Length: 592
Image 1 (cartoon, rainbow, N blue to C red):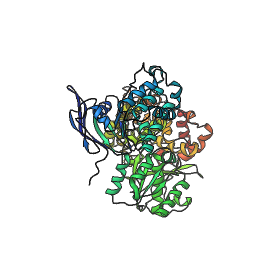
Image 2: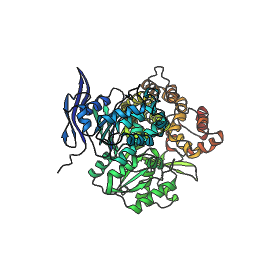
Image 3: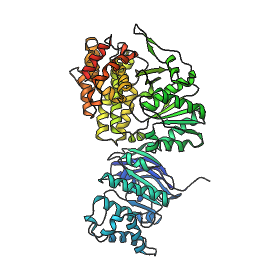
Image 4: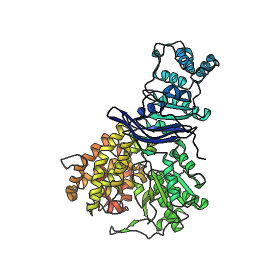
């Protein structure tokens, strides 16, 4: 028989006169889980919650509770069936004391028992309410009021709890306490919780699944892990190895959710990726692949895990087992400046990618790894080392630190700019990259102002997709090439390399591509044709470092950076020829 337990909503619509607040929402809250409903102000979240509890009528659709249709039941009838609703805005009787507010909630469904015992349990859960039990609710802090609201909503042990914006207006420390309590209610009491939140990062930290409302309609339902599980099944794979950073794997629920969704199809998790991808870390992954024998890799994260997987796939294809073995397959630059690209066999397995940054590495068959002995970041390529499938889900990106998200956004800008300004540009990539630049110029500031706006985050992801179309199609220049050496020599993060180098390379190149730079400036909203200033303005607007000094590079590093840069194929394909280490130092001085 089909499972009819849980809360289900089918094609729900809510209207206020001619205004459509909720349109065609369908979702299911599994018993004993937390389902997050995300969306910006005005998306229809509160209207959806009120329709479920009966405070506003549904214009169309159906609501079922454990298989029973409750769409036409009154609010108090729904409450008697075990549905409780904590409204947005901390709705309390402000002139009544804490204990009197709790007593009102208790009296509504008093079936006997001791109110005193229930009240004492509340004070155990929230000790700061105990000395304030006779204090009028209107005199409490916002956090204390939210504790009373939650206690009143749970006083009769409901089976289903609707929480509307519980973090609204609260200090971060109180938010952590409130959400810890919410998580414990679900875990210890088995309460099914529908959690309505504008701050996605908070909700997704405790939720088992979720959906996003945009203007009252579900545009992405279910956890990100579902898309991975579906893709693995469609590809006919049965042993997927998850590769991620240690922080993402152990500090968030993203990787564990994917592992749980894969179930028996998960071969394991590798989370020992190292920034700038030293060769030893690549060998560690290759050895783990040989040990576990997966048939697919699921890469979750940014450029570091993606590059680790790409270069590990090269190592597996070529049978590399020590660091010296990489020398035979790295891309090299000949004395005359031409690039030498070794032929690499196809790897024994592929990767699918769930990106959490804006680096664009997911769209490339080019990977980088650092040789610590030479202090050089080498590039590697192969036909099938990039992502076979890329899954874009803005909800999993909310865990990404702002500095990393925005700086990798400038990395994507770098991709687009050096594509348009390439010494061998193409009309196709001009069109895609210029449009991508315009999208990023709009969405990145919005990401900083409204980090929980998933629509804006998705726009950034789509902008990266467009900005990365030049990967492998056109030659890039010195911003990328010198940037590789900043990481290898001075440990500068990828995104910050672009923040400090791109404006300076643009200032160095106008003698040969001023017309191309005008296109970039216009796409970024600057009419005077100054592309370097346009990029620099965006970097500053996003609060990112704009000089070598700001990222810890000293002039003592210049010699090693310049020497390594002259071995980089992108430096040697810069539109204005970089003929010597002195030219590299000249660009570094512009960035100093």
